[in-house]
Amino acid sequence: MAEILNQFTYTDVKGKVVNGEKGIAFGCKLYGTANAGDFVKRKAVAGSKVIVVEAIAADTDEVFGIIPYESAKKNAYVSGDMVTVQHDYTRIVCTASGTVAATDTVMPVVSGMKVAKQTTGKTVVGIALLPAADGELVEVLVKTHPVTA
Image (cartoon, rainbow, N blue to C red; front, top):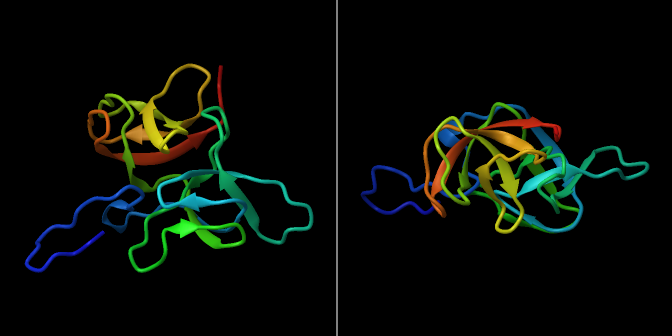
């Protein structure tokens, strides 16, 4: 988020935690690459003493959380980096893929790491708190669930 002289409000960016309202958060080690705003899943690594995560590869992957945007830190990560992963009960800014209504249950869209209205058999990542059109930023209350039929 870039602050401009005489600016009285901040511009939302993908992955930004809304009003500092962080829910459950974990310090995790990243496998592969990821950016702020990306959805991640747990990765089993034998002998690891920390939680290991990697970016999701499909909209049916069980989402563990989302990497938040942190203006004071880097926001592009590589394998081995320690990252914060925001889990349930975090209000976070995401990008909409298609029209999303307030109160829609949303799922991840891997291409561009966006959210869309959840469809049968896809992973739930949260609830849209505000409406948004395709490509707009939308506040989401993160609430991960396993895939259901």
